[in-house]
Length: 103
Image 1 (cartoon, rainbow, N blue to C red):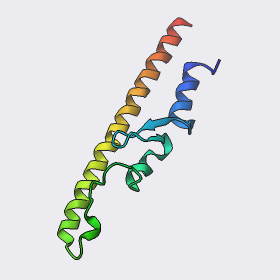
Image 2: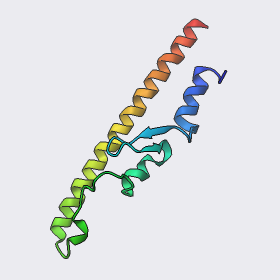
Image 3: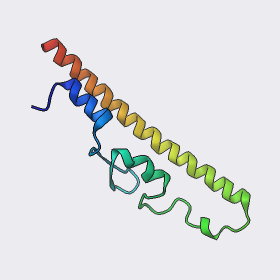
Image 4: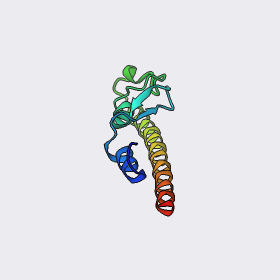
């Protein structure tokens, strides 16, 4: 027995460092605490969103536009992760309520 639902919920949301999330872009398995780093430090093994960024020399407006697009895409990805965590929170809350009703 691992504990009651509340203990499992608390562990999952706060303590678990071994919970694995699958990246939707590259299907790589990433530890939950490392998912933000996976996206923000371009560790994702997908085809680069900005394949020619290294070849842009002196064109600040083009670089700014591409950066804006990349930030927007990362924001969408992080929002999706937040939604997934919220769904897990709701599920764990329902399980806790069910456990309390049965006790």
